[in-house]
Image (tube, rainbow, N blue to C red; front, side, top):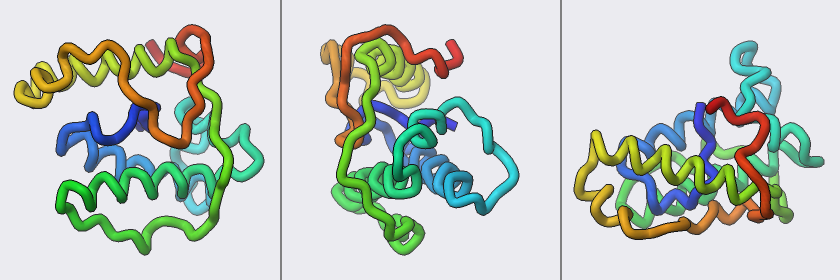
Length: 142
């Protein structure tokens, strides 16, 4: 499961589809509607906020918006109606770790997307995340 800190506009088709599927799975976990993945490290930052279901719904809404922008038809009805008006803190080290991780993936599976993003040093975060100084998050498996 990868719940990207980076903005979904940087994801290739496979990455965007995976973010949608994995976000929906995370939503089920946070709604207590599944037994698997309950202790997945990517969920820690959502579980620690005061409105975890609203936070993951906010995350998914941005994925959905990006899908619509690209002409894809993700089913918005799958997103929990809960809301979240805040942001979740995430470290710059985590953002950059994920950025390099994505670029390595793109180098193998989408060379055109990789070339488009190669010169960008630091991506914008997903709007849910407020970037603070710090190293890679302790929950990340490196």
